[in-house]
Amino acid sequence: MMIVLKAATPQLPRTTAVADHVVAVDETDSTNALAAQMIGDGSLTLPDHQDGELAVAVVAADRQTAGRGRNGHKWISQPGRCSTMSYAVRIPRAIATDESVNGWLQMIAGLVTLDALNGMIEEYGAAPNQPDCLLELKWPNDVFCHGLKLGGLLSELVIPPSSGTDADADDDVVIVFGVGLNLALGACWLPTPQSTSLQLHVTGLPSFGEMRDAVAERQVEGFRERLAKFIADPKGQAESLREEMKTVCWARGRQVEAHFTDGTTLTGEAIGLNEDASLILRTQDGTDHTVRTADVGVL
Image (cartoon, rainbow, N blue to C red; front, side, top):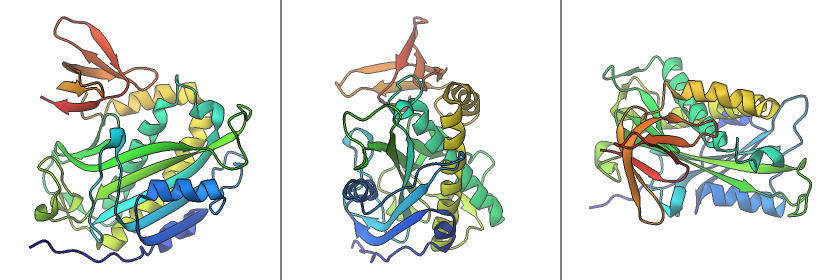
């Protein structure tokens, strides 16, 4: 018999203390969709970034009825077990739409998430059950632990009411970063055999509510710090991020298969990332291919 858990409004005192705005509801279709709606109707506003300080707003729900991933995939979560949050940040339109650097925005979201999870684990004195249970990123948008999916990321561009399609390149837009994390799911609740939960790999964790708040607090601060640096020097930061990704990119050095939206596939070794954050995949004949949009699985 399936047990339906009741959703409750997230309590986020630590996150509220550091974020510019927090919206918390017990249930919504999607936190990204709710954030976009509120930005669009003007009920959620973000002040201009001044002196390099970025404003960050948070939209949180205990249950999502229509959670979304990349390429139309569904994100399934359980209330009281999974963190479903969206973080909205204003950034210059010129950076958000520059294909030579905007791929790094998704990578930044992943690195911010790893920092937040690892920081929370360290704060509470928790420890992995096994030495190889490291947190990594599966390009381009999954959080992995022990080769299984622990979380997913989805970034979307939203045009605020003050901007229009004919606005100047200097205008700001809002990037909404949706982050779904399985924090306290038991093995019987996992939606697929390829998914996992933090509590299955780490002992000594606090309660789910404490975990969710501690991770979200760190994510607000991480987005604010990392995106401010990126805005100030996109090209320079891209190179630094490329080096940083070498240590946490799960696919790097593995034989993988890229599945494209048109139904085609490409098999080869994931070599690393290009300057624009696209994946380099080397096929058996020694040819390097650039992969920009695909689902990537290990063979």
